Image 1 (cartoon, rainbow, N blue to C red):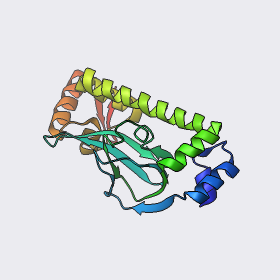
Image 2: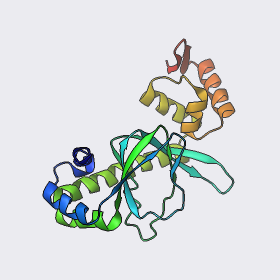
Image 3: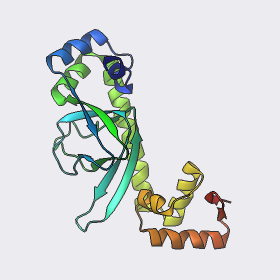
Length: 203
């Protein structure tokens, strides 16, 4: 277990002696979740850092009207909630849901702060993780706020090469399945997208 913890991207290059001393005084805890379980609820208080050791999760935002939008899917090993932990209002802006059976290691905010203060390598890793997640989020906001659905479909196909399951793709793109079906039918008719035995691909 310990070797797995120190192999996480957050702790790579860190001083194990420093980290072990802090974590002995304020130990984290392992916990498991089954596929479909809520790991964190939108608007709940964020007091700990979540390290995804096994499995995958997705981050989902739900509006007051009940509309759901999937912002990101993350697979182990990865760090969850890094950008929310030290905010003025430390709350999850999204729900984090298990996309498969997961195993997480949870570190308290105070213990993490001590590690960051005493180990520059871990601090550098933490800042990189926050920056990368923030950049991804800004790109997603651009996709949903500024791009048309056809542009988002093209972007999705460039990243994933094929749409095999319309329901799954609609879930990721944050649209209703009928809307995505109509758009893809139009794009097939226009010649932008091809229907193949494997699914829908760019021409």
